[in-house]
Length: 164
Image (cartoon, rainbow, N blue to C red; front, side):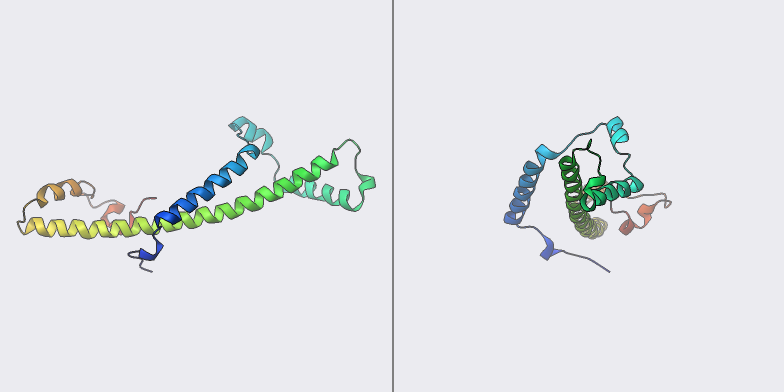
């Protein structure tokens, strides 16, 4: 499906400001709750796999339905708060991931649009230079360096070479 000229998808100055302010509020709200783990700590603490999450959930279920079977050595208020915080963070992370995916997809479309317009401009530059118009030779030379001359890479089909 061809996408060209995303006029309705551009951001106004007010929209950009609103988004930046919303992100700043989010960053400020999250800052005291976030953690910065080094690779070794991620390895050490990141071992709660899906099987272990099932254990965590089952222990929580027992605590809620049959608290008399729970160990007195566990701080159950902390356990439940950790469980609640983890679920909250997971849900919010999934929402943010979807936003990021949508933003990346929109960026790809804008990159594509820019690239198509750049190709049109390059073709126009070649046309004007070949017709002897003044000033286009340098521009064509500078733009030509971005195109493959060997015919063996993806840049042969420039429409497939948009970078993120």
